[in-house]
Image (spheres, rainbow, N blue to C red):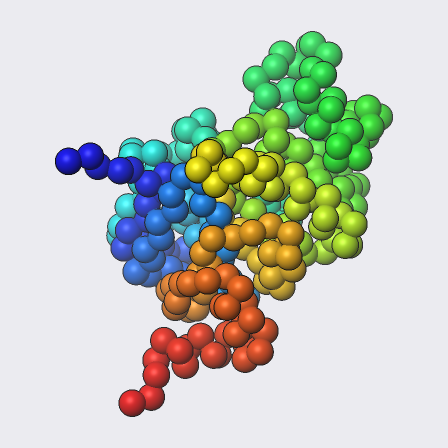
Length: 257
């Protein structure tokens, strides 16, 4: 019998932060080429799930396991997980004084810092409306909201991860930037390829759901009080949330008999 391995398997996951349980009973399975979206009210645990998948030390896994590419990564550090092919676009990444954006791109693209930026990276930067002078700036220092978002996507394009997490890529940016970001997100997620040829997978956090007008998701999950309340068709779930709010998800999962 052939055993098919999913790209990401999260089973019975429970996570504590500062001795307080934030997530419990999380089961999430994402196959190669799939894009999933994570919805939920503020404080429901969406970012905690991201940080736990990344292996940030303040997020203590007390139960369950995370399997990536068939390997248990539950106890691996963040660096090891990134090297395996996990990438993330943060909602509010910090500024990094003394580190130029073009040097960071070279590191992510496995190029020598002392060398000139490769033609490939120059092309990617131009697509995301960054000129050579901008690339000389310290990472995120004095960047506008749209510039931060574009910088995050540019770094992912340089890194070329297999599994990518996007934390609210549509928040705090105008329509022009959302469309530009979505175009590159679709490339990162292999949306420019036929379904059977897609390998890269993604998980998007979105509060407004606006990004889904431009990036097609396969499955949506609603996170409520640290648990996945429901999963299903992204269009149907988002429409219900827009009509009834997240309280409708609670009623759906706990029907009155």
